[in-house]
Length: 228
Image (cartoon, rainbow, N blue to C red; front, side, top):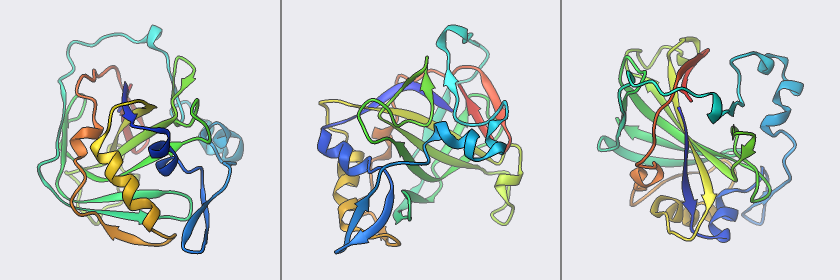
């Protein structure tokens, strides 16, 4: 579910900490950053399976959107979060969520539980998000990945048509401090590729979600349910 709303980085320093282009190596215990060669706009060229009608990335054309008054409000309840763990991958990082933060409402027929979140970004301040709005990119995009609670943990969710639901939030540079991003920026520089670290105190995840978001038309894409 992609929101044409924004969360702000407090400063260029915060952006540079999170929006590293691609983690490729570790030098003297620090993460080395390399220029991007696998951006979303290259996916359809590099991977033919990504060239379908319901593939990512997408351009959200606000002029073609229609308001659907029948949709229920989308709700996220973070009260069930028990722990948060940062995993530093070879090309990115993600924060795994323990416990049961719940997503419900909107076009969803079941409750979904937050499993992890990660970011997409670019090498500059004018582009980096996986998706666009009216052809315009944002510096970065947050993806919160939720799993359908009707399936057991042993089932492969990526093989289910409604196995996953993703909430996307566009990020912009700004002057306001974001508590979750600020804390995350303090953790990342202390990690090497392959490291995992429990975040204490836990990130205030509610600060990552714009409170004035509105939900638009539903659309299914293989294993991921999106709302534009």
